[in-house]
Structure formats: C-alpha cells, structure tokens
Length: 180
Length: 181
Image 1 (cartoon, chains in turn orange, green):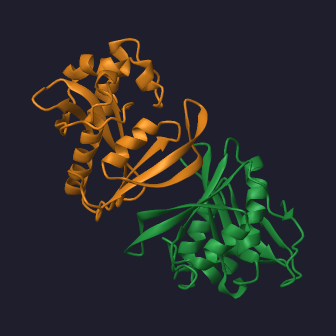
Image 2 (cartoon, rainbow over the protein chains, first blue to last red):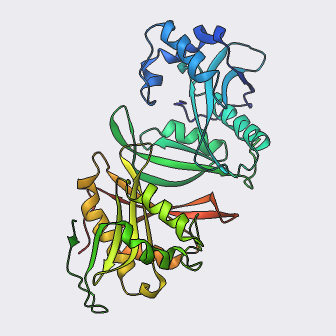
Image 3 (cartoon, rainbow over the protein chains, first blue to last red):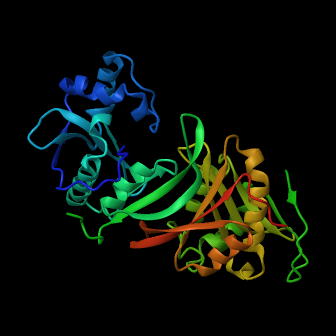
C-alpha cells in the first residue's frame, strides 16, 4: 500500500479492466513481494505456476476482480476486487499494488474508480466497505483520500496469517459525494 | 441438560435467569415471541404465522446449531440467545430475542452476560462476540451496554430489514474483556 503522505501535484489516472491469464508475469511482480503479501491473507508466491492456477480458478470466475493499469498502459500494476457479503446492499473491497507504485496516488485513484463503478454496476448496492489493519496507516490514508468514512476500530475482528487483528472499518455509502 | 446459573443482583425479580439448550417441547414458548410483530420489528425474520414453519426452524436450525440457548426465567422459557460463528473463526455474532412480557426486567441484560461468560469456553477459537443493533433500538443497545459490551461504531446503510435500509450499531465483547457481575 502507499507509504508516502506527500500530496501528488496532479491527479493520477488509472484504468480498471478484467484480468487475463497473460497477466501472470505482471501479477507476479506484486504477488511475489513479501512486503505486499505481509498485509494480505496469502503468502508471497515463489513461482508462476500456482499464480496461474490462482488467476484461472479464483480471479477469472470472480464476480468483480480488476487489474489496475496506469492510463495509457496495458500492463497491470495492481489489483482491486469486490467481495460480496451476505447482503446485496453491502460489498467489501480489497486492493494491492506493486511496491514500485506506492506513494503516487495510484491506489487512491483505483479505489475512487472502483467505488464509482460498483455503484453504477451493482443493483441494490448501498454501502461499500473496506477493512484495514490498525497497523497499516498507509492503506487507511488511501481510503480517506478516496472519500471513505472511518467508522470504527473493530477489535479482534479477523485473523490474518493466523494472527487475530484489530481492523479499521471504512465505508462509502450511496449518498456520499464521489471524490474527483 | 446443562444450566449456566449465576445469581441475579437486581431486585426487580427474585427469579434466576438461566440458559439451556432448546428441545422440541419448547415450540409453544418460542411461538410466543416469534409470532409477535413488536418483538420481531427489528429482526430480519418474522413474525412467524405458522407453527409448522417455526417447528422446522427449531428442528433444522436451532437444535443442530453450535450455540443456541433458551433463556429461562424461573423455569419458563422466555426467549433465546444465540452465538453464531462467522466465516472468520475468531468472530461470532450474538442475537437475543425475548418475549415482550419479560422486557424491562433485566432479562435482556442477563442473557448476554450469561452467554459471554460461557461461549468463549464453548466455541473453540472465538475471541470476539459481536452484535448488530438497529440505531433505533435503544432498549437493546442499553441491555448490551449493561452486559459489558463495547459500542464500537454506527455502520451506515449496513443492511435491509423488512424492506428498509438501516444503520446498525456494532457492539463487541472480546474474550479478554472483564465479565460484568
């Protein structure tokens, strides 16, 4: 996630598109990075074969999993996904970014695009939420800059790599103003 | 059957609130609250209009459930409390429902107190018991607060209850929180 709080002088443009199997090498850049994997539930990938299987079995059939590309480029630099919940009115998002693109506003731009797209595409959606480890302030800033509201710290909410964490709950609801 | 017995300090009732597993014979007692639209106003379910439908719920959901207890007051079944594990092993959700005749007596506070005293030992891996309460349900919010739960947040536009989009208050009780006497 982003580590720098320095404001970018002009807005970063990103596009979101579905993944393809041929994106495996680009995906390997962040999927094999222990610093990216550290805040995720999965372990850093050591070879492309299992990552290819992951794209084929989990990403391609997924209801909403998108590659983050810098404007004018086709090579993904990260991923953003929507995870359905038990209720149609509520969806959770998650995202990861290759470390080379941290601190430049890329994740914030991707999250903004994601929120706009989800409210446009998902019938009955009223709330988009995201959960971030209390110990991950960079990712919290991404959501704040994307217009999310920090609602709470939820204590001992879930386990990441076997360690139970306090998580910060963020939300963006249908009537919140989209941030440019 | 097992009884979780703790003496009640409140002077409003000399009866003790205990929890025990449900049995099929509890159907009529359950119907008393499950068919009451005032009781079920804030619930995503009910009110039940059919004994058969409630029997199916009792048989197929309640009896096999990992932690579903009848709330008993002086030997009568007056409500239910359940703690349901979620997709995350460390987290489970508590629900309390009580027959209207027993509101305002401290039973709605005693039931979650008994539950958190027992459930961390009963459900392996659970460290967090949470409860979601409608923003307009002040009585249930007070009951959980008196039972030692922490009010963590208002979650906006969280779910749809009986066709209406609701803000919900999130409460939690962590395995290391002090039990309220």
